[in-house]
Image 1 (cartoon, rainbow, N blue to C red):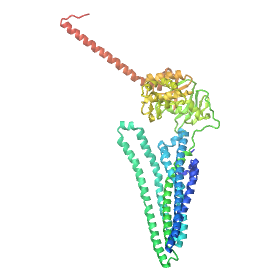
Image 2: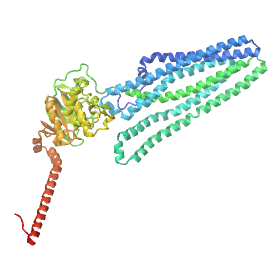
Image 3: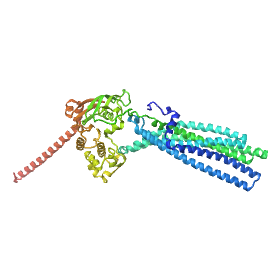
Image 4: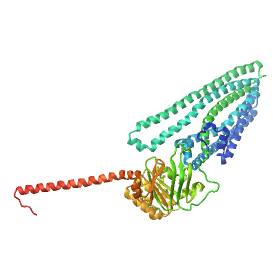
Length: 629
Protein backbone atom coordinates (compact mmCIF):
# COMPACT_ATOMS: atom_id res chain seq x y z
CA UNK A 1 0.00 0.00 0.00
CA UNK A 2 1.22 3.52 -0.79
CA UNK A 3 1.53 5.30 2.53
CA UNK A 4 0.28 8.83 3.03
CA UNK A 5 3.85 10.06 3.50
CA UNK A 6 5.00 8.55 0.23
CA UNK A 7 5.70 11.16 -2.44
CA UNK A 8 5.92 10.77 -6.18
CA UNK A 9 9.67 11.31 -6.03
CA UNK A 10 9.98 8.21 -3.80
CA UNK A 11 9.07 5.93 -6.73
CA UNK A 12 12.36 4.74 -8.32
CA UNK A 13 12.75 5.19 -12.07
CA UNK A 14 13.22 1.45 -12.60
CA UNK A 15 9.87 0.81 -10.90
CA UNK A 16 8.24 3.36 -13.18
CA UNK A 17 9.56 1.60 -16.30
CA UNK A 18 8.61 -1.80 -14.90
CA UNK A 19 5.08 -0.71 -13.95
CA UNK A 20 4.35 1.16 -17.17
CA UNK A 21 5.97 -1.63 -19.19
CA UNK A 22 3.43 -4.14 -17.88
CA UNK A 23 0.72 -2.27 -19.80
CA UNK A 24 2.46 -2.74 -23.16
CA UNK A 25 1.34 -6.37 -23.30
CA UNK A 26 -0.02 -7.28 -26.76
CA UNK A 27 1.80 -4.34 -28.34
CA UNK A 28 5.31 -5.60 -27.59
CA UNK A 29 5.83 -6.74 -31.21
CA UNK A 30 5.02 -3.26 -32.56
CA UNK A 31 7.24 -1.73 -29.89
CA UNK A 32 10.15 -3.84 -31.15
CA UNK A 33 9.41 -3.38 -34.86
CA UNK A 34 9.50 0.42 -34.65
CA UNK A 35 13.20 0.69 -33.56
CA UNK A 36 14.22 -1.96 -36.12
CA UNK A 37 12.62 -0.02 -38.99
CA UNK A 38 14.09 3.24 -37.61
CA UNK A 39 17.58 1.71 -37.62
CA UNK A 40 17.20 0.69 -41.27
CA UNK A 41 15.93 4.17 -42.13
CA UNK A 42 18.92 5.85 -40.42
CA UNK A 43 21.49 3.60 -42.11
CA UNK A 44 20.10 4.31 -45.56
CA UNK A 45 19.80 8.05 -44.87
CA UNK A 46 23.46 8.15 -43.83
CA UNK A 47 24.50 6.16 -46.93
CA UNK A 48 22.68 8.42 -49.42
CA UNK A 49 24.90 11.54 -48.91
CA UNK A 50 28.03 9.37 -49.27
CA UNK A 51 26.83 7.91 -52.59
CA UNK A 52 25.72 11.37 -53.70
CA UNK A 53 29.19 12.73 -52.97
CA UNK A 54 30.69 9.97 -55.13
CA UNK A 55 28.32 10.95 -57.95
CA UNK A 56 29.35 14.61 -57.66
CA UNK A 57 33.03 13.67 -57.75
CA UNK A 58 32.54 11.43 -60.78
CA UNK A 59 30.62 14.20 -62.56
CA UNK A 60 33.43 16.63 -61.73
CA UNK A 61 35.98 14.23 -63.20
CA UNK A 62 33.76 13.65 -66.23
CA UNK A 63 31.71 10.47 -66.49
CA UNK A 64 29.26 8.79 -68.81
CA UNK A 65 25.46 9.06 -68.66
CA UNK A 66 25.31 5.33 -68.08
CA UNK A 67 27.18 5.73 -64.79
CA UNK A 68 24.95 8.62 -63.78
CA UNK A 69 21.91 6.45 -64.56
CA UNK A 70 23.26 3.67 -62.32
CA UNK A 71 23.81 6.15 -59.49
CA UNK A 72 20.29 7.48 -60.03
CA UNK A 73 18.76 3.99 -59.90
CA UNK A 74 20.68 3.13 -56.72
CA UNK A 75 19.68 6.41 -55.03
CA UNK A 76 16.04 5.96 -56.04
CA UNK A 77 15.97 2.41 -54.67
CA UNK A 78 17.54 3.57 -51.42
CA UNK A 79 15.05 6.43 -51.12
CA UNK A 80 12.13 4.00 -51.63
CA UNK A 81 13.52 1.61 -49.00
CA UNK A 82 14.06 4.53 -46.60
CA UNK A 83 10.50 5.69 -47.21
CA UNK A 84 9.18 2.17 -46.60
CA UNK A 85 11.14 1.88 -43.33
CA UNK A 86 9.92 5.31 -42.23
CA UNK A 87 6.26 4.49 -42.93
CA UNK A 88 6.47 1.11 -41.21
CA UNK A 89 8.24 2.67 -38.23
CA UNK A 90 5.54 5.37 -37.97
CA UNK A 91 2.71 2.84 -38.14
CA UNK A 92 4.29 0.50 -35.59
CA UNK A 93 5.09 3.44 -33.32
CA UNK A 94 1.54 4.78 -33.48
CA UNK A 95 -0.02 1.38 -32.80
CA UNK A 96 2.31 0.70 -29.87
CA UNK A 97 1.86 4.12 -28.23
CA UNK A 98 -1.92 4.31 -28.61
CA UNK A 99 -2.17 0.70 -27.44
CA UNK A 100 -0.12 1.51 -24.36
CA UNK A 101 -2.38 4.49 -23.60
CA UNK A 102 -5.48 2.32 -23.94
CA UNK A 103 -4.07 -0.33 -21.61
CA UNK A 104 -2.94 2.28 -19.09
CA UNK A 105 -6.42 3.78 -18.93
CA UNK A 106 -7.91 0.30 -18.59
CA UNK A 107 -5.44 -0.71 -15.85
CA UNK A 108 -5.92 2.50 -13.88
CA UNK A 109 -9.70 2.31 -14.12
CA UNK A 110 -9.60 -1.33 -12.99
CA UNK A 111 -7.31 -0.37 -10.09
CA UNK A 112 -9.68 2.41 -9.03
CA UNK A 113 -12.59 -0.04 -9.04
CA UNK A 114 -10.67 -2.21 -6.56
CA UNK A 115 -9.95 0.68 -4.22
CA UNK A 116 -11.68 0.92 -0.89
CA UNK A 117 -13.13 4.24 0.26
CA UNK A 118 -9.98 4.97 2.24
CA UNK A 119 -7.86 4.53 -0.90
CA UNK A 120 -10.09 6.86 -2.88
CA UNK A 121 -9.90 9.40 -0.03
CA UNK A 122 -6.15 9.65 -0.72
CA UNK A 123 -6.80 10.64 -4.34
CA UNK A 124 -9.15 13.46 -5.23
CA UNK A 125 -11.65 12.78 -8.00
CA UNK A 126 -10.15 15.56 -10.12
CA UNK A 127 -6.65 14.17 -9.72
CA UNK A 128 -7.81 10.74 -10.87
CA UNK A 129 -9.47 12.29 -13.93
CA UNK A 130 -6.24 14.13 -14.79
CA UNK A 131 -4.24 10.92 -14.47
CA UNK A 132 -6.65 9.04 -16.74
CA UNK A 133 -6.59 11.77 -19.40
CA UNK A 134 -3.76 14.33 -19.48
CA UNK A 135 -1.13 12.16 -17.77
CA UNK A 136 -1.93 9.17 -19.97
CA UNK A 137 -1.68 11.33 -23.09
CA UNK A 138 1.72 12.62 -21.96
CA UNK A 139 3.00 9.09 -21.42
CA UNK A 140 1.64 8.09 -24.83
CA UNK A 141 3.57 10.91 -26.51
CA UNK A 142 6.72 10.07 -24.56
CA UNK A 143 6.50 6.38 -25.47
CA UNK A 144 6.07 7.33 -29.13
CA UNK A 145 9.24 9.42 -28.88
CA UNK A 146 11.13 6.72 -27.00
CA UNK A 147 10.63 3.91 -29.51
CA UNK A 148 11.17 6.11 -32.55
CA UNK A 149 12.80 9.53 -32.19
CA UNK A 150 14.82 8.59 -29.10
CA UNK A 151 16.26 5.69 -31.14
CA UNK A 152 16.65 7.67 -34.36
CA UNK A 153 18.45 10.74 -32.96
CA UNK A 154 21.35 8.97 -31.15
CA UNK A 155 21.83 6.57 -34.08
CA UNK A 156 21.85 9.47 -36.54
CA UNK A 157 24.39 11.37 -34.44
CA UNK A 158 26.72 8.35 -34.26
CA UNK A 159 26.36 7.25 -37.90
CA UNK A 160 26.58 10.84 -39.20
CA UNK A 161 29.72 11.48 -37.13
CA UNK A 162 31.35 8.30 -38.48
CA UNK A 163 30.46 9.19 -42.08
CA UNK A 164 31.62 12.79 -41.51
CA UNK A 165 35.08 11.48 -40.53
CA UNK A 166 35.02 9.17 -43.54
CA UNK A 167 34.15 12.08 -45.84
CA UNK A 168 35.99 15.03 -44.27
CA UNK A 169 38.65 13.56 -42.02
CA UNK A 170 39.90 15.80 -39.19
CA UNK A 171 37.56 18.60 -40.22
CA UNK A 172 34.72 16.55 -38.70
CA UNK A 173 36.17 17.28 -35.25
CA UNK A 174 34.50 20.67 -35.50
CA UNK A 175 31.13 18.88 -35.49
CA UNK A 176 31.98 17.04 -32.33
CA UNK A 177 33.07 20.26 -30.58
CA UNK A 178 30.05 22.33 -31.69
CA UNK A 179 27.67 19.46 -30.95
CA UNK A 180 29.10 19.17 -27.45
CA UNK A 181 28.58 22.88 -26.76
CA UNK A 182 25.08 22.79 -28.23
CA UNK A 183 24.25 19.69 -26.18
CA UNK A 184 25.32 21.44 -22.96
CA UNK A 185 23.10 24.43 -23.77
CA UNK A 186 20.08 22.31 -24.71
CA UNK A 187 20.35 20.04 -21.68
CA UNK A 188 20.74 23.09 -19.44
CA UNK A 189 17.55 24.57 -20.89
CA UNK A 190 15.70 21.29 -20.36
CA UNK A 191 16.84 21.04 -16.73
CA UNK A 192 15.58 24.57 -16.03
CA UNK A 193 12.07 23.84 -17.34
CA UNK A 194 11.74 20.47 -15.57
CA UNK A 195 10.53 21.89 -12.20
CA UNK A 196 8.07 24.17 -14.02
CA UNK A 197 6.40 21.28 -15.79
CA UNK A 198 6.20 19.35 -12.52
CA UNK A 199 4.27 22.24 -10.97
CA UNK A 200 1.94 22.37 -13.96
CA UNK A 201 0.39 18.95 -13.31
CA UNK A 202 -0.62 19.85 -9.78
CA UNK A 203 -2.28 22.97 -11.16
CA UNK A 204 -4.08 20.86 -13.76
CA UNK A 205 -5.76 19.07 -10.82
CA UNK A 206 -6.97 22.39 -9.42
CA UNK A 207 -8.25 23.49 -12.83
CA UNK A 208 -10.19 20.24 -13.25
CA UNK A 209 -11.54 20.64 -9.73
CA UNK A 210 -12.85 24.11 -10.58
CA UNK A 211 -14.56 22.84 -13.73
CA UNK A 212 -16.02 19.72 -12.06
CA UNK A 213 -17.41 21.66 -9.08
CA UNK A 214 -18.95 24.32 -11.31
CA UNK A 215 -20.59 21.89 -13.74
CA UNK A 216 -21.91 19.49 -11.08
CA UNK A 217 -23.21 22.36 -8.95
CA UNK A 218 -24.41 24.62 -11.74
CA UNK A 219 -27.92 24.87 -10.26
CA UNK A 220 -26.54 26.12 -6.96
CA UNK A 221 -24.19 28.53 -8.77
CA UNK A 222 -27.07 30.06 -10.71
CA UNK A 223 -29.49 30.16 -7.79
CA UNK A 224 -26.95 32.14 -5.75
CA UNK A 225 -25.88 34.23 -8.78
CA UNK A 226 -22.23 33.20 -8.29
CA UNK A 227 -21.30 32.94 -11.97
CA UNK A 228 -18.91 35.87 -11.63
CA UNK A 229 -17.13 34.31 -8.66
CA UNK A 230 -16.82 30.96 -10.44
CA UNK A 231 -15.41 32.70 -13.52
CA UNK A 232 -12.80 34.45 -11.39
CA UNK A 233 -11.86 31.17 -9.69
CA UNK A 234 -11.49 29.45 -13.06
CA UNK A 235 -9.52 32.36 -14.50
CA UNK A 236 -7.11 32.24 -11.56
CA UNK A 237 -6.46 28.52 -12.07
CA UNK A 238 -6.21 28.96 -15.85
CA UNK A 239 -4.00 32.03 -15.43
CA UNK A 240 -1.54 30.15 -13.23
CA UNK A 241 -1.26 27.47 -15.90
CA UNK A 242 -0.77 30.14 -18.57
CA UNK A 243 2.06 31.83 -16.67
CA UNK A 244 3.83 28.54 -15.99
CA UNK A 245 3.51 27.39 -19.60
CA UNK A 246 4.56 30.81 -20.84
CA UNK A 247 7.62 30.76 -18.59
CA UNK A 248 8.59 27.27 -19.74
CA UNK A 249 8.04 28.03 -23.43
CA UNK A 250 10.01 31.28 -23.11
CA UNK A 251 13.00 29.28 -21.90
CA UNK A 252 12.49 26.55 -24.50
CA UNK A 253 12.41 29.24 -27.20
CA UNK A 254 16.22 29.46 -26.85
CA UNK A 255 16.51 26.00 -28.41
CA UNK A 256 15.97 27.14 -31.99
CA UNK A 257 18.31 30.19 -31.90
CA UNK A 258 21.05 28.04 -30.36
CA UNK A 259 20.49 25.44 -33.06
CA UNK A 260 20.56 28.06 -35.83
CA UNK A 261 23.77 29.58 -34.44
CA UNK A 262 25.48 26.18 -34.39
CA UNK A 263 24.41 25.45 -37.97
CA UNK A 264 25.65 28.85 -39.15
CA UNK A 265 29.02 28.30 -37.47
CA UNK A 266 29.42 24.92 -39.13
CA UNK A 267 28.32 26.19 -42.54
CA UNK A 268 30.74 29.10 -42.33
CA UNK A 269 33.64 26.95 -41.19
CA UNK A 270 33.09 24.08 -43.62
CA UNK A 271 32.42 26.26 -46.65
CA UNK A 272 35.41 28.53 -45.98
CA UNK A 273 38.01 25.94 -45.02
CA UNK A 274 36.56 23.25 -47.28
CA UNK A 275 36.65 25.53 -50.31
CA UNK A 276 40.16 26.65 -49.43
CA UNK A 277 41.33 23.03 -49.11
CA UNK A 278 39.76 22.10 -52.47
CA UNK A 279 41.35 25.08 -54.26
CA UNK A 280 44.82 24.85 -52.68
CA UNK A 281 45.12 21.07 -53.11
CA UNK A 282 43.43 21.07 -56.53
CA UNK A 283 41.07 18.41 -55.23
CA UNK A 284 43.79 16.14 -53.89
CA UNK A 285 42.91 16.53 -50.19
CA UNK A 286 39.16 17.15 -50.60
CA UNK A 287 36.71 17.17 -53.43
CA UNK A 288 33.42 19.01 -53.91
CA UNK A 289 31.41 15.88 -53.25
CA UNK A 290 33.15 15.29 -49.93
CA UNK A 291 32.47 18.85 -48.80
CA UNK A 292 28.81 18.47 -49.78
CA UNK A 293 28.53 15.24 -47.77
CA UNK A 294 30.31 16.85 -44.83
CA UNK A 295 27.78 19.70 -44.73
CA UNK A 296 24.89 17.25 -44.98
CA UNK A 297 26.20 15.06 -42.15
CA UNK A 298 26.83 18.09 -39.96
CA UNK A 299 23.32 19.35 -40.47
CA UNK A 300 21.91 15.86 -39.70
CA UNK A 301 23.96 15.66 -36.49
CA UNK A 302 22.81 19.05 -35.23
CA UNK A 303 19.17 18.44 -36.14
CA UNK A 304 19.28 15.11 -34.33
CA UNK A 305 20.86 16.77 -31.31
CA UNK A 306 18.12 19.39 -31.28
CA UNK A 307 15.48 16.67 -31.57
CA UNK A 308 17.17 14.80 -28.73
CA UNK A 309 16.89 17.87 -26.50
CA UNK A 310 13.19 18.18 -27.28
CA UNK A 311 12.74 14.49 -26.54
CA UNK A 312 14.49 15.08 -23.23
CA UNK A 313 11.94 17.78 -22.38
CA UNK A 314 9.00 15.60 -23.42
CA UNK A 315 10.29 12.67 -21.39
CA UNK A 316 10.89 14.99 -18.44
CA UNK A 317 7.28 16.16 -18.63
CA UNK A 318 6.02 12.62 -18.99
CA UNK A 319 8.18 11.37 -16.12
CA UNK A 320 5.99 13.29 -13.70
CA UNK A 321 2.89 11.94 -15.45
CA UNK A 322 4.29 8.41 -15.34
CA UNK A 323 4.94 8.72 -11.61
CA UNK A 324 1.37 9.87 -11.03
CA UNK A 325 0.05 6.94 -13.07
CA UNK A 326 2.29 4.49 -11.21
CA UNK A 327 1.03 5.88 -7.91
CA UNK A 328 -2.45 4.66 -8.88
CA UNK A 329 -1.28 1.34 -10.35
CA UNK A 330 0.90 0.33 -7.38
CA UNK A 331 -1.61 1.44 -4.74
CA UNK A 332 -2.76 -1.62 -2.82
CA UNK A 333 -6.40 -1.67 -1.72
CA UNK A 334 -6.70 -1.26 2.05
CA UNK A 335 -9.45 -3.89 2.05
CA UNK A 336 -8.74 -7.26 0.48
CA UNK A 337 -10.15 -10.77 0.56
CA UNK A 338 -8.75 -13.14 3.21
CA UNK A 339 -6.70 -16.16 2.10
CA UNK A 340 -9.72 -18.46 2.39
CA UNK A 341 -12.82 -16.26 1.99
CA UNK A 342 -16.36 -17.33 2.84
CA UNK A 343 -18.73 -17.21 -0.14
CA UNK A 344 -22.10 -17.52 1.59
CA UNK A 345 -23.84 -15.23 4.06
CA UNK A 346 -26.02 -17.39 6.36
CA UNK A 347 -28.56 -14.73 7.37
CA UNK A 348 -29.09 -11.01 7.88
CA UNK A 349 -28.15 -10.72 11.55
CA UNK A 350 -25.67 -7.93 12.39
CA UNK A 351 -23.51 -7.67 15.52
CA UNK A 352 -21.26 -4.81 16.64
CA UNK A 353 -18.94 -5.92 19.43
CA UNK A 354 -16.97 -3.09 21.10
CA UNK A 355 -16.54 -1.35 17.74
CA UNK A 356 -14.62 1.90 17.43
CA UNK A 357 -13.65 3.57 14.17
CA UNK A 358 -11.44 6.42 13.00
CA UNK A 359 -11.05 7.53 9.38
CA UNK A 360 -7.38 8.26 9.96
CA UNK A 361 -6.77 4.73 11.25
CA UNK A 362 -5.56 6.08 14.59
CA UNK A 363 -7.64 6.70 17.70
CA UNK A 364 -6.88 10.42 17.96
CA UNK A 365 -10.03 11.44 16.05
CA UNK A 366 -12.74 8.85 16.65
CA UNK A 367 -15.91 8.75 14.53
CA UNK A 368 -17.49 5.79 16.36
CA UNK A 369 -16.72 4.75 19.90
CA UNK A 370 -17.54 1.56 21.82
CA UNK A 371 -20.51 0.45 19.71
CA UNK A 372 -22.31 -2.64 20.98
CA UNK A 373 -25.41 -3.50 18.98
CA UNK A 374 -27.04 -6.80 18.05
CA UNK A 375 -29.64 -6.97 15.25
CA UNK A 376 -31.69 -10.08 14.54
CA UNK A 377 -32.56 -11.36 11.05
CA UNK A 378 -35.64 -9.67 9.60
CA UNK A 379 -35.67 -6.98 12.27
CA UNK A 380 -36.46 -3.38 11.30
CA UNK A 381 -33.98 -1.05 12.97
CA UNK A 382 -34.22 2.72 12.90
CA UNK A 383 -31.13 4.87 13.39
CA UNK A 384 -31.53 8.51 14.31
CA UNK A 385 -29.17 11.21 15.48
CA UNK A 386 -27.98 14.72 14.83
CA UNK A 387 -25.71 15.84 12.02
CA UNK A 388 -22.21 14.47 12.58
CA UNK A 389 -23.34 11.65 14.86
CA UNK A 390 -21.76 9.09 12.44
CA UNK A 391 -24.97 7.40 11.35
CA UNK A 392 -23.65 6.76 7.80
CA UNK A 393 -20.28 5.67 9.17
CA UNK A 394 -22.00 2.99 11.23
CA UNK A 395 -23.68 1.31 8.25
CA UNK A 396 -20.55 1.55 6.07
CA UNK A 397 -18.84 -0.91 8.40
CA UNK A 398 -21.57 -3.51 7.72
CA UNK A 399 -20.76 -3.85 4.00
CA UNK A 400 -17.07 -3.42 4.82
CA UNK A 401 -16.56 -0.19 2.94
CA UNK A 402 -14.24 0.52 5.87
CA UNK A 403 -12.79 -1.81 8.49
CA UNK A 404 -13.40 -1.17 12.16
CA UNK A 405 -10.34 0.31 13.87
CA UNK A 406 -11.19 -1.65 17.03
CA UNK A 407 -13.69 -4.40 17.77
CA UNK A 408 -15.56 -6.75 15.44
CA UNK A 409 -18.47 -6.38 13.02
CA UNK A 410 -20.26 -9.65 12.24
CA UNK A 411 -22.88 -10.41 9.59
CA UNK A 412 -24.67 -13.74 9.84
CA UNK A 413 -22.51 -14.46 12.89
CA UNK A 414 -19.28 -14.26 10.85
CA UNK A 415 -16.64 -11.51 10.98
CA UNK A 416 -17.08 -9.35 7.86
CA UNK A 417 -13.31 -9.58 7.29
CA UNK A 418 -13.68 -13.32 6.65
CA UNK A 419 -16.11 -12.89 3.73
CA UNK A 420 -15.39 -12.55 0.05
CA UNK A 421 -15.94 -8.82 -0.52
CA UNK A 422 -18.23 -9.26 -3.53
CA UNK A 423 -20.31 -11.87 -1.72
CA UNK A 424 -20.77 -9.67 1.34
CA UNK A 425 -21.64 -6.52 -0.60
CA UNK A 426 -24.03 -8.43 -2.84
CA UNK A 427 -26.05 -9.39 0.25
CA UNK A 428 -25.96 -5.89 1.77
CA UNK A 429 -27.89 -3.41 -0.35
CA UNK A 430 -27.48 0.28 0.49
CA UNK A 431 -29.80 3.06 -0.74
CA UNK A 432 -28.18 6.43 -0.14
CA UNK A 433 -29.80 9.84 0.22
CA UNK A 434 -27.86 11.08 -2.81
CA UNK A 435 -28.13 8.01 -4.99
CA UNK A 436 -26.75 7.87 -8.49
CA UNK A 437 -28.63 6.93 -11.61
CA UNK A 438 -26.57 6.15 -14.68
CA UNK A 439 -27.23 7.26 -18.23
CA UNK A 440 -29.55 4.71 -19.84
CA UNK A 441 -33.19 3.67 -19.69
CA UNK A 442 -35.12 3.16 -16.45
CA UNK A 443 -35.09 -0.58 -17.13
CA UNK A 444 -31.30 -0.59 -17.50
CA UNK A 445 -30.89 1.30 -14.22
CA UNK A 446 -33.26 -1.03 -12.38
CA UNK A 447 -31.44 -4.12 -13.64
CA UNK A 448 -28.33 -3.04 -11.74
CA UNK A 449 -30.17 -4.77 -8.87
CA UNK A 450 -30.84 -7.95 -10.86
CA UNK A 451 -29.55 -8.26 -14.44
CA UNK A 452 -31.96 -11.16 -15.08
CA UNK A 453 -35.10 -9.49 -13.71
CA UNK A 454 -38.19 -9.79 -15.91
CA UNK A 455 -40.33 -6.81 -16.86
CA UNK A 456 -43.00 -8.03 -14.44
CA UNK A 457 -40.47 -8.10 -11.58
CA UNK A 458 -39.34 -4.57 -12.45
CA UNK A 459 -42.93 -3.31 -12.32
CA UNK A 460 -43.62 -5.12 -9.03
CA UNK A 461 -40.51 -3.64 -7.37
CA UNK A 462 -41.43 -0.18 -8.60
CA UNK A 463 -44.96 -0.51 -7.23
CA UNK A 464 -43.55 -1.42 -3.81
CA UNK A 465 -41.21 1.58 -4.03
CA UNK A 466 -44.13 3.82 -5.09
CA UNK A 467 -42.33 4.56 -8.37
CA UNK A 468 -44.63 2.83 -10.87
CA UNK A 469 -47.21 5.62 -10.95
CA UNK A 470 -44.86 8.37 -12.12
CA UNK A 471 -43.01 5.99 -14.47
CA UNK A 472 -46.26 5.16 -16.27
CA UNK A 473 -46.82 8.89 -16.84
CA UNK A 474 -43.48 9.32 -18.60
CA UNK A 475 -43.56 9.41 -22.43
CA UNK A 476 -41.76 6.08 -22.87
CA UNK A 477 -42.62 4.49 -19.53
CA UNK A 478 -39.92 2.09 -18.39
CA UNK A 479 -37.96 2.74 -21.59
CA UNK A 480 -37.59 6.44 -20.73
CA UNK A 481 -33.96 7.52 -21.03
CA UNK A 482 -32.32 8.75 -17.83
CA UNK A 483 -29.72 11.47 -18.34
CA UNK A 484 -26.34 11.21 -16.63
CA UNK A 485 -26.82 11.60 -12.87
CA UNK A 486 -30.61 11.40 -13.27
CA UNK A 487 -30.94 15.11 -13.99
CA UNK A 488 -34.26 14.66 -15.82
CA UNK A 489 -36.09 13.23 -12.77
CA UNK A 490 -36.82 14.86 -9.43
CA UNK A 491 -35.05 14.03 -6.18
CA UNK A 492 -37.99 12.04 -4.85
CA UNK A 493 -38.38 10.12 -8.11
CA UNK A 494 -34.68 9.33 -8.13
CA UNK A 495 -34.85 7.99 -4.56
CA UNK A 496 -37.83 5.76 -5.37
CA UNK A 497 -36.08 4.34 -8.43
CA UNK A 498 -33.01 3.58 -6.34
CA UNK A 499 -35.16 1.87 -3.71
CA UNK A 500 -36.78 -0.28 -6.41
CA UNK A 501 -33.31 -1.14 -7.70
CA UNK A 502 -32.27 -2.26 -4.22
CA UNK A 503 -35.42 -4.35 -3.79
CA UNK A 504 -34.61 -6.29 -6.96
CA UNK A 505 -31.41 -7.53 -5.32
CA UNK A 506 -33.46 -9.28 -2.63
CA UNK A 507 -30.58 -8.79 -0.17
CA UNK A 508 -30.28 -10.24 3.29
CA UNK A 509 -29.69 -6.74 4.66
CA UNK A 510 -31.27 -3.57 3.26
CA UNK A 511 -29.93 -0.23 4.45
CA UNK A 512 -31.78 3.02 3.76
CA UNK A 513 -29.44 5.93 4.48
CA UNK A 514 -31.94 8.79 4.72
CA UNK A 515 -33.15 7.66 1.32
CA UNK A 516 -36.77 8.74 1.74
CA UNK A 517 -35.96 12.33 2.72
CA UNK A 518 -37.28 13.66 -0.61
CA UNK A 519 -40.67 11.88 -0.43
CA UNK A 520 -43.73 12.82 1.59
CA UNK A 521 -44.70 11.06 4.81
CA UNK A 522 -47.55 9.09 3.22
CA UNK A 523 -45.29 7.71 0.48
CA UNK A 524 -42.64 6.92 3.10
CA UNK A 525 -45.17 4.81 5.03
CA UNK A 526 -46.28 2.99 1.87
CA UNK A 527 -42.66 2.19 0.97
CA UNK A 528 -41.97 0.73 4.42
CA UNK A 529 -45.17 -1.31 4.22
CA UNK A 530 -43.94 -2.69 0.89
CA UNK A 531 -40.67 -3.71 2.56
CA UNK A 532 -42.47 -5.72 5.21
CA UNK A 533 -44.60 -7.54 2.62
CA UNK A 534 -41.98 -8.14 -0.10
CA UNK A 535 -38.84 -8.89 1.94
CA UNK A 536 -40.01 -9.91 5.44
CA UNK A 537 -36.86 -11.95 6.15
CA UNK A 538 -34.54 -9.14 5.12
CA UNK A 539 -32.97 -7.12 7.90
CA UNK A 540 -33.90 -3.48 7.34
CA UNK A 541 -31.84 -0.63 8.79
CA UNK A 542 -33.41 2.79 8.26
CA UNK A 543 -31.35 5.91 8.88
CA UNK A 544 -33.61 8.95 9.03
CA UNK A 545 -33.86 12.53 10.17
CA UNK A 546 -37.64 12.29 10.72
CA UNK A 547 -38.88 10.34 13.71
CA UNK A 548 -41.96 9.47 11.65
CA UNK A 549 -39.79 7.40 9.28
CA UNK A 550 -38.62 5.12 12.12
CA UNK A 551 -41.59 5.22 14.48
CA UNK A 552 -42.81 1.78 13.34
CA UNK A 553 -39.37 0.14 13.61
CA UNK A 554 -38.87 -2.81 15.93
CA UNK A 555 -36.12 -0.87 17.67
CA UNK A 556 -34.61 2.59 17.25
CA UNK A 557 -30.94 3.36 17.89
CA UNK A 558 -30.16 6.93 18.98
CA UNK A 559 -26.62 8.04 18.14
CA UNK A 560 -24.93 11.03 19.74
CA UNK A 561 -21.33 12.01 19.04
CA UNK A 562 -20.43 8.59 17.63
CA UNK A 563 -21.81 6.71 20.64
CA UNK A 564 -25.09 4.85 21.21
CA UNK A 565 -27.17 7.06 23.49
CA UNK A 566 -30.28 4.88 23.69
CA UNK A 567 -32.00 1.86 22.11
CA UNK A 568 -35.72 1.10 22.25
CA UNK A 569 -39.11 1.38 20.59
CA UNK A 570 -40.69 4.70 19.70
CA UNK A 571 -42.83 4.73 22.85
CA UNK A 572 -39.94 3.66 25.09
CA UNK A 573 -37.60 6.32 23.75
CA UNK A 574 -40.20 9.06 24.24
CA UNK A 575 -40.10 8.13 27.93
CA UNK A 576 -36.38 7.37 28.40
CA UNK A 577 -34.35 9.31 25.78
CA UNK A 578 -34.14 13.06 26.12
CA UNK A 579 -32.48 13.38 22.68
CA UNK A 580 -35.20 11.38 20.91
CA UNK A 581 -37.99 13.17 22.77
CA UNK A 582 -36.55 16.57 21.89
CA UNK A 583 -36.28 15.63 18.18
CA UNK A 584 -39.82 14.27 18.20
CA UNK A 585 -41.31 17.33 19.89
CA UNK A 586 -39.39 19.72 17.65
CA UNK A 587 -40.54 17.98 14.47
CA UNK A 588 -44.16 17.62 15.62
CA UNK A 589 -44.49 21.12 17.07
CA UNK A 590 -44.71 22.60 13.58
CA UNK A 591 -47.56 20.26 12.66
CA UNK A 592 -49.31 21.02 15.95
CA UNK A 593 -48.97 24.79 15.46
CA UNK A 594 -50.34 24.53 11.93
CA UNK A 595 -53.34 22.56 13.22
CA UNK A 596 -54.02 25.15 15.95
CA UNK A 597 -53.73 27.98 13.42
CA UNK A 598 -56.18 26.27 11.06
CA UNK A 599 -58.65 25.67 13.91
CA UNK A 600 -58.34 29.26 15.07
CA UNK A 601 -58.93 30.56 11.54
CA UNK A 602 -62.04 28.38 11.22
CA UNK A 603 -63.49 29.56 14.51
CA UNK A 604 -62.74 33.17 13.67
CA UNK A 605 -64.48 32.81 10.32
CA UNK A 606 -67.52 31.18 11.96
CA UNK A 607 -67.65 33.95 14.58
CA UNK A 608 -67.64 36.67 11.94
CA UNK A 609 -70.42 34.94 10.01
CA UNK A 610 -72.51 34.68 13.17
CA UNK A 611 -71.98 38.37 13.97
CA UNK A 612 -73.02 39.40 10.49
CA UNK A 613 -76.14 37.25 10.75
CA UNK A 614 -77.10 38.84 14.10
CA UNK A 615 -76.58 42.33 12.65
CA UNK A 616 -78.93 41.50 9.77
CA UNK A 617 -81.61 40.28 12.17
CA UNK A 618 -81.37 43.46 14.22
CA UNK A 619 -81.83 45.62 11.15
CA UNK A 620 -84.93 43.65 10.10
CA UNK A 621 -86.48 43.97 13.57
CA UNK A 622 -85.88 47.71 13.66
CA UNK A 623 -87.60 48.07 10.31
CA UNK A 624 -90.59 46.11 11.60
CA UNK A 625 -90.14 43.26 9.28
CA UNK A 626 -91.07 39.67 9.96
CA UNK A 627 -88.47 37.13 10.75
CA UNK A 628 -88.89 33.43 10.06
CA UNK A 629 -88.08 31.23 13.01
